[in-house]
Each structure stands twice: as structure tokens, then as C-alpha cells.
Image 1: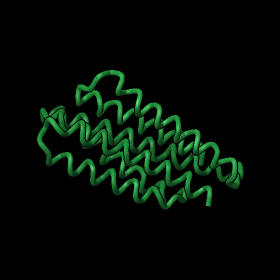
Image 2: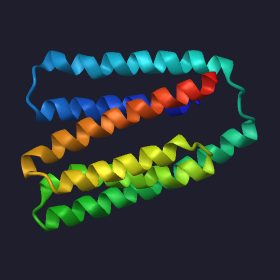
Image 3: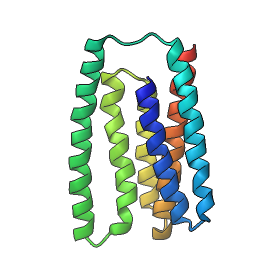
Image 4: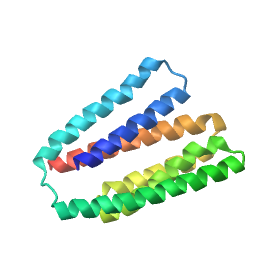
Amino acid sequence: MFTGALILNILAGLWLCFGLSALALPRWSLAVPVLVSVALVAAAYRASLQGEPRTPEEERRIGRLIARWSIFEGVAFSIGIFALLLLHRPSDITPLIAVIVGLHFLPLARGIPMRIYYATGIALILTGAVAFFLPVAAHAPVACLASGIILWASSAAISAQALT
């Protein structure tokens, strides 16, 4: 649980920093997502102390599952980005990445199992899809900021679930 929340928060912080950078906000504003992510990681750590640990066998199974779908995600990124560059549509890369990351969560939701990942995946897919239809200048800020917030919400939900 803690490792998942840690990864979600690192990625949320990155998405949000990219989104804030795309808005050309002052550099100090980048501290906000970093500080919120650190706070959510601390909350996840406290929550993980109360949950039941997984068996080593379960940890290995989940590790293999995540590795398999992360490789798929990386291949999809490569193919999608290459195709968009060939089509001279680099502004569509960020929404595409949001969609691919969302798709990546769906098999994880089933295999881990972690029901919240269904909502995370669907929300990311919808975020990317909506961003495609916005003006080009809005692609990166919308996809990045919304994706970061979705990952934060998922991390918070996972921590809250561990406490119940």
C-alpha cells in the first residue's frame, strides 16, 4: 500500500509541476505540489502501519504484474509519441500519455486488486480524451493538472481505505 501511494505521489507531483510550468507560473509555485505530495506520502506511511502486510509471495506477484503492465505502458508511450511526431502533432502527446496511463491502471485494479484504480484509470482516460478536444494551448496544462489531482485523490483514498 505504501509503495503504491509513494509512486502515485511522485507521479502526481511531476504531473502538477509540468502543468504549472506550462502555465508559466513563478518557479516557487512548484513547491506546492511537492509539499502536498510529501504530506500525502506521510499520511500513507502512517496508514500503512495500521494495515495488514502482504505476504512475500503476494508482493512478488504484484511486482510482476506491475512490471508487465509498465512495460506495456512504455511501449505504448513510444509508439504513440512516435506516431504523433510523424503526424506533426506534438501538442497531443500530453493528453495521449494521460490516456495510456489511465489504461495502465485498469489491469492493475483487477490484478492487485485495488478498486480505486478503476476510478483512477477511467478519470485519467477521460482527462486525456477531453484535453484532445480543447485548444492546443490548453492540452498540457489541463492534462497535467487534472492528472496530478487524480493521482493525489487516489493516494488519499488508498490511505483512507487502509485506516478503515
